[in-house]
Image: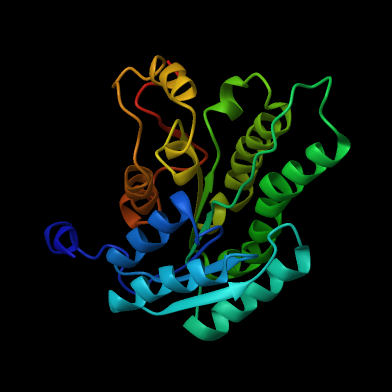
Length: 255
């Protein structure tokens, strides 16, 4: 907790939901929010043990933690999770939509199942949770929503028509909801990571890593904690005059 003592608990007293918090970037986000003072709830669909491990770390930081089994693509699951979190924590201040999948294929080979699966999780899932919290944030006249998109939602990527379309949709969703909730003092922003060192990337072929590295002007792959730091800032009152933005965390990869 060294960083907390230096920077301050600027999320003290806040409560947050992080979707997809059991793995990868989501884990880093959940722990980072707790380090800065927030109580944190995460969902899981299959990875219960991993989710419990994350929340144990949250609790070890002296924060409340909650694990909820919920399929983010299911509208009713999202509503139930938000209700459970408000009941457990007494309120809700922050939503970080992070859960996502990819199922790659060139467009002439992509199946309807591939398309529907990725859009239902990556885009509809974000809608489900935003819809579930919007009334709460509107009524309390405060709230932070941060949506994790991707630089590939800004530029597209060969073999990822479904993924790139879903991430581009998140950007449009972010900007629209920012306009709708702005007068209620709710900030809505998106973070667009580039290549980040998750377990998936660590196991990637060296040729794939080398090709990606060639695009990154800082000459290194980003770390999940670096994305989490930016998200924690966007969840705090330090970012109170920022809304409707897409902030790239990519080491210059998009350039």
